[in-house]
Image 1 (tube, rainbow, N blue to C red):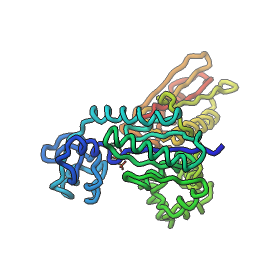
Image 2 (cartoon, helix red, strand yellow; image 1 turned 180 degrees about the horizontal axis):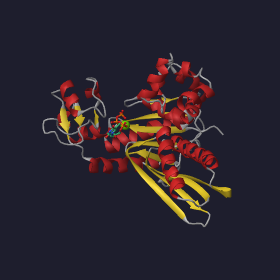
Image 3 (cartoon, rainbow, N blue to C red; image 1 turned 30 degrees about the vertical axis):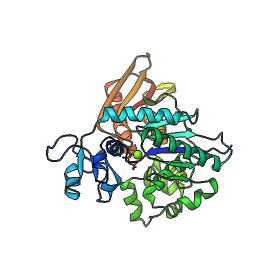
Image 4 (tube, rainbow, N blue to C red; image 1 turned 90 degrees about the horizontal axis):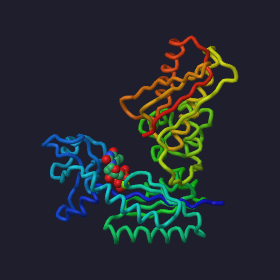
Length: 344
Ligand code: TTP
Ligand code: MG
C-alpha cells in the first residue's frame, strides 16, 4: 500500500517563542544565544528568527560573529525549560491527528497518515493542523507531505517558513533532481565538497553514480545515498521507546583464537551496527565491545569519544582497537564477540 507521510517542523522555534512572549521585539532580528558582551553561554547561536537570517546569521554560528553581522539585534538567553513545555503542548496537538506519530526533536515530528484516501485529504489535514497550532499556541510551522519520511522532510525544508508542500509519488523524481546535493539529508558540507570535486553538484548528477562507486567513496553510507537520491526510504514512523543503544553479536561455531576469523566477523558486525545508526539518523559517543571466552566468562571494554559522531571510520578503528586489546591480553579461545554503541 502507498504510504502518506507528514512531517512538521516549527519555524525558528526558540526565536518564535521569544517573539511571542516579547511582542516589543517584533520586526527586529532576534537571536537566541548568550549576549556577546557578557560572554556567557555556549557561545554559539541556538537559533534566530527569519529577519536575522537575512544578515547571514544561523544556528551554530559564534555569537560574536552574529554580533558583528547585526549589532542592533536582540540577543536573548536560552530558556530551555520553557521551550520544552511549549514543545510538549504542541506535540500533544500533533499526536491527535494520527495514532502513528514520531517525535524527532523538540520542534519536529512525523505522522503516518496513510489511512487517508489521497493527497488532497492529506493537505486538508495539514491545513487543519497548522491552524490549530497557530490558534492555540500562536506559533507557525511548516508541513511537508510525501510517500515517505525522506520526501516529507525535504518538502518541509523547501516550504519553510510557514509553508505547506505535498510531493506526490509521481512528482518525487522532478522534485529531487534539480536540487543541490546538500539538500539531501545525510549529505553534509564535507561530503558535498568531495562530490563537487568530482563535478557532482545536483541530485540529478549524483544519481549517475553507481552503487559501487558511491560505496567506494563513502563506504556503507554510500548505499544509503544511492537509495535516497532515488527518493527511496522505507523507515517507518514509530513512536516506540527511543532506542538507547544498538548492538550486534556473533557466536562462533567453534571457539577460536584465529585473529583473521575474529576480525572478519567483527568487520561485519561493525558494518551492521553502523548501518542501523545511519538508518535511524543516530549518532554515537560510547562504544562497548563484548567478548565471551570458551569458559563463558564475559568481559566488556568501552570507550567514550570526546564528541558524538556517526562516522564509520571512527567506529571501525575504535572498536577494532578495543578488540585488539582483548586478543593481546587473553590467551583463552573466544566464543562470542559483540559490539554495542550508545546512541545520542
Ligand atoms: P531547527 O528546526 O533546526 O531550527 P528552527 O526551528 O530554529 O528554524 P527552522 O526550522 O525554521 O529552520 O531547530 C529547532 C530548535 O532547536 C531551534 O529553534 C533551536 C534548537 N537548535 C539549537 O539549539 N542548535 C542548533 O544548532 C540547531 C540546528 C537547533
Ligand atoms: Mg524548526
